[in-house]
Length: 265
Image 1 (tube, rainbow, N blue to C red):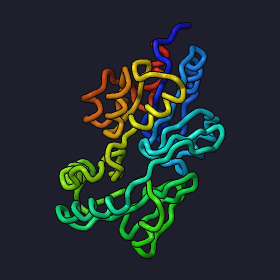
Image 2 (image 1 turned 135 degrees about the vertical axis):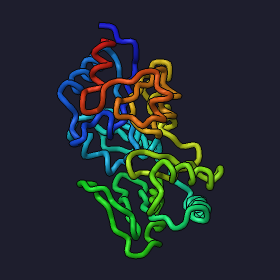
Image 3 (image 1 turned 45 degrees about the vertical axis):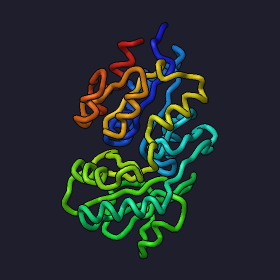
Image 4 (image 1 turned 30 degrees about the horizontal axis):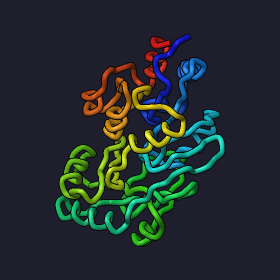
């Protein structure tokens, strides 16, 4: 059985995972068949390791995962953090003050670095329902008390796209701003993206960009698509990602990844 790629890179939410946070048997089988044909699978997610680990464990996933929007390369089988990049907190604070000068007060949350780094929720930040561990800060200073991978921002009136666009315009070259999912706009270290983390992980596996197929659904997957040989957007993907994808497949609910892998196999 020949398979044209040596690496299958998949986003997690809205891509590999169905809306109930599970992976279908059909998709599991397709990934297993791709692996049997010689292709490694790397999960590339905006979630930091503490919010990803339980899902990887449930999947029985033992390979490398790129977490925290590219900041972390994690060995799932060994429960070990191989690389981790942190956000300069002074720069982040300066960037946020520039954004607030343009759009008014923001609600913030912060993702702490490390295998067990909590997400600290600041006043007024709306947390999405679910089992993900979070620490509610009584004092906003707690957000800045430990090294961070990223800061989440919300605005009382602006939608995700409008907030991300306004923030990007305000921060200049201090930090990067990315829209990673519904209600998820993030401040990241400048130059960090899923492509940065994926290239590090791929190098460890001895695989090149030209040998990679990538699947995703949100604007934070755009750099990964630019890096990989072939980018596949899910039917449920953001229009900005569909615009740069080489191909559009079925949705995450309808086994879009499996559909493409089965055809290639």
